[in-house]
Amino acid sequence: MELYLDTANVDEIRTALEWGVISGVTTNPTLVAKEKRPWKELIKEITSLVPGPVSAEVLSLDYEGMVREARELAALAPNVVIKIPITPEGLKAVKTLSREGIKTNVTLVFSATQGLLAARAGASFVSPFVGRLDDVSNEGMEVVADLVMIIENYGLPTRVIAASIRHPMHVLEAARAGAHIATVPFGVLQAMIRHPLTDVGIKRFLDDWEKAKSSLQG
Ligand code: G3P
Image (cartoon, rainbow, N blue to C red):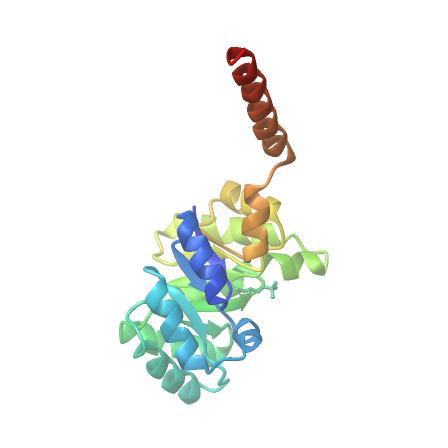
């Protein structure tokens, strides 16, 4: 499973790239708004940093507006992927954009049937929102598992991005479910690295080494 970083913060992106563990980035209007920077300038900076796909979301809700925005965003960099919400207008836009060779990531997906429609329309990626489903007592990871199965059953080219990830267990469960990608907030990525027994183990190694060193030095 690949890991993408779910953020528009370039400092977080730089750090995660240094760790060598992420191969893409996803953003959304909320994440972009947090950075308080001109949208296109920010997307251009992120796409220049990240060698892989960078998802940027359209704001229009109508077909014409979505396609217009998508073409503008796609022109910013070759690795821009256009995030489109799963609506009738969104499906129409995905169909058009996929025929133009513009990659799309269908977002705000909360059911496997929504994801199937996105895949049939030609979406490159589909993003089921696990955390938001869990938040309302639905089994978010079941949507991921169902979509992975459907795509495998029929050999569809669409890749499943487990999104709205709240903690490391979501990442583990997404990997178990066969998700192609999990897009992870920076805080969750940090939590994935940490374990108290690792800290204890490092301390014990260093303490034992110091004791041995001092005894060797007499
Ligand atoms: O990529 C979608 C993700 O950013 C949404 O996450 O935490 O707002 O549900 P969240």
